[in-house]
Image (cartoon, rainbow, N blue to C red; front, side, top):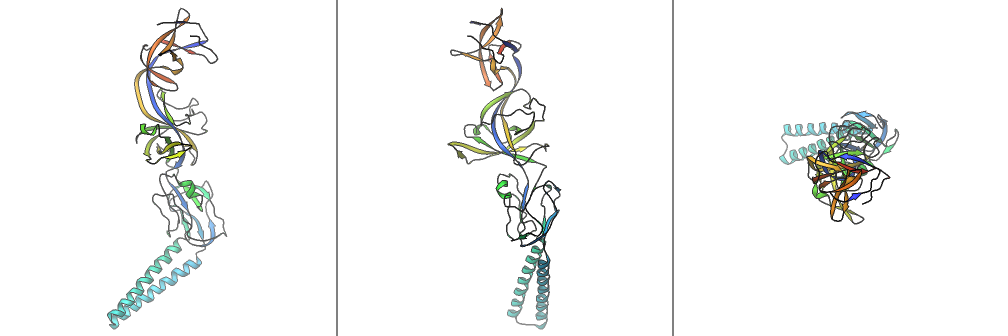
Length: 364
């Protein structure tokens, strides 16, 4: 104990034993883990658009069609050509033609079979089907629209495009989904699982490891505590980080930590992907999110509000009430957060410290 201090408007808070979390804060964007950016891979006139934005669809469901009459005719002709070429091979085998002629016949048959397979795939591609179950996020097709084929786009991952009827693909880790979707004729997003594409600056990324737990607050969520948007190290005390409004806490885990940095205004940052746990309701692809990644967690430690700490010369002190006056007590601190600070010496559980009320002032 030491110097006396003038009384001020204040409240007393008892030092308590609890949990404190050291975190790295970041911002990111919510994305679905699956997204199909679909475009017809063959040309033709759109004859039907069977879905609208917001519709739920199943894997394999037909979403749109183009006029298939010419494609059906081409497929039938190709099939007939195969039959004729097969008959020629059989006839020449029976007639005992030369080996050279028979080889030529078989080569012609193989080419016809390849052409027939291509024609059949093109016919199938006249119906756009969804490779995933999910929700329709964008429709850029109208009945009567004339399309030029070959404008497929994908988000990476396991594609189902080409001439398979979708002309698009699906992917996980949808960091490029926005740019890919911009050219798609129809977009379907999975709603069963989400991730957050975040960035962490180079001063903090070294603290992260895959598997670290993260607390995620979608930007604008009512009743949620807004995590600091600045990327950096901090700490939080307590057993949860949900907002005072009672909204459900969204958790996730660090899935990937990028090795190649990008630089903005001279600040280097690294991409970090966080898989969201479960399937929380109310998430929307493209929404911003504040993230608090837990890199260190201490249990059964003595803490006081960070606002109770003051600097006196080279000492860190708290103020306690004795005889109606504030008296400074020197303390040693450990992990510090925006809200709570660990006390390693100078106080015991139950000791009451002064925290100035908003608008009050302390004279030392």
